[in-house]
Amino acid sequence: MRYWINELWRLGYMLFGLGAMGTLLGELFNALFAGLGWGLAAGLGLYVFLHLRHVRQLYVWLLRHPREAPPPGTGVWGDLFDRLYTYQKAQSQMQRRLRDILRRIQDSCEAMRDSVVMLDPHGDLEWWNSAASDMLGLQPDHDRGQPITNLLRDPRFIDYFEARDYREPLMIPSPLDAAHTLQFHITLFGDDERLLMVRDVTRLHQLEMMRRDFVANVSHELRTR
Image (cartoon, rainbow, N blue to C red; front, side, top):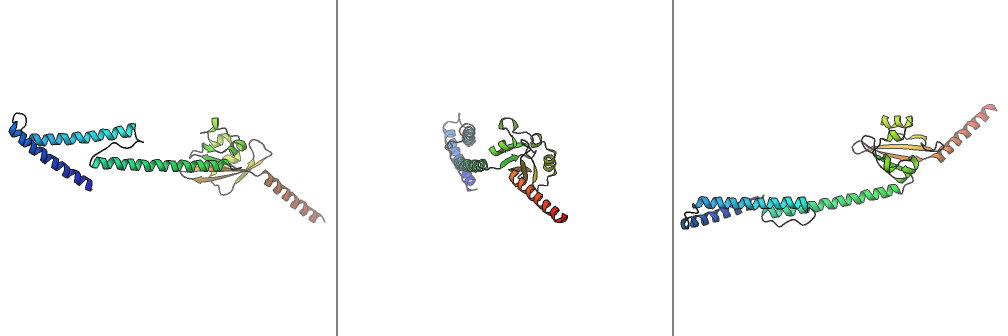
């Protein structure tokens, strides 16, 4: 607020000074100036010209050189330029930090043996790690932006995906090799986006089947004795 008050005082001083000058010049050159009225008009014209000049500087700076230091300004314009530049630097730093965080997250996902797939609110593929390419056969050049249900066509997965009840994981054969068993787990986050985690549980599935067969055989032997 104090900047606008200072600017109004500066305008008042300018108008008073120019008005006085206009009055003196009007006495001397009555044919050219009409006293105080011409002085006030000249002061207002000069004031508007200075503001338009600053507006043009602001426009050129934001349009052509937004990452460079702001142009010099006087009064409230100088403060405005400085504040815009400070805000712009803070936003650039925040964007760099967010990019660094995203890159670290992606690097961490790339190091995982499990598949990680990010889906948008429509269920379309946004990003996935290398494990997902190997485990699900996803191809970055062709499949990005495609609905996940167009690529994983198992009816059990489609029902699981559309039911939106992801409290329990889904175990189905791999779409690339039916001898492998995959565990699918979906988590909702953000604006109705989905994170799909896929793990190869073939060995665990085989051990579970062996355990069930063993229990069934033991139970059968006990019943037949």
